[in-house]
View (cartoon, each protein chain N blue to C red):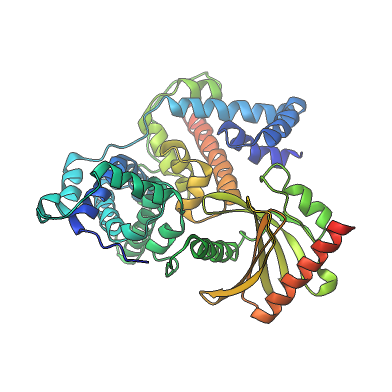
Length: 185
Length: 265
């Protein structure tokens, strides 16, 4: 079988067309995983450079889960760096639980409140506070819109594991939401 | 169905990920269980609220430009590059190529496992089979249905696959059935029947194939794992384990012999 040699720039162009449309998705996941805009940008850039390097071995089935799998690895390196750095812990988010709740409506059942609640920053904060690996599974499903199968691909776990993580994640988010309610009252 | 099962499966129901059979099962449970019905309603509402909220982040334009600038430019390409296909056509053919593989390459690219890709789909699939085997060995990943009873494991696969994997108890032959699992190989759901030989796990992957011809067994070694592959009655089988090739051959022969008896019996 003849080896298919390919022009470097051609390859880069194919990569651009295949991978760059997913930039917002990759960036979104990076923001949730790293909780820091600058770190997220660096991670995304590193992810794209690594992806280009391995583009030859990419066989699908979908671009997004593949990019996410690479991004996760980049983020893992970043976690390790933070863990060894003296001052910055991973969970030193300024949006800790002690922060004032960002909305103040009262006398609502939690579900009705959920329905009414539109404040993205509150939901983002609650999602952000989820523990791993539940947050990651949740973000991939609810925000990046991956199917269970694609999530399984991206995180390298069986679909059954994805399913149970997602159930846990939603339960955690729901009780965090209810806890916010209590705090407001 | 128990409430514990329903509490996990209702999420798959909300997400439209359940096949018709399981969706019916969950809905039947929910129809008779007010507490699960309340759970489902609450999660549906939560999901709606989330759907109405923009939780995505937009990548800064500067990031897009930085990445774009870091990629080699087409302009750098020598003008004389011969090409007898249009860019679109070549891109399509590449995309078709993508559709054949799966997450294997992602794993390879991310350095989780080192895989040497060889030519041919078959070997690609076998590499994936080995990856699936490796994944299954991670804590908590081995078994979805835990049972040494073939009459428990076999029905568990119903409705989950386009094939009903033969589940044969080989305990008497020295291979203990310990359960079953749903796995994914080559972008398709695949059944895995799990056996143990002493401390070693044997994953028997079963997938449907269009060919009903019986193909004799072949043993290969990939990344230090032995794979015994054979086909019978419209199903492909791959037995993967770290046990020796001779023991894996013994497993395959006993399985095939037992399958033969089941068919005739």
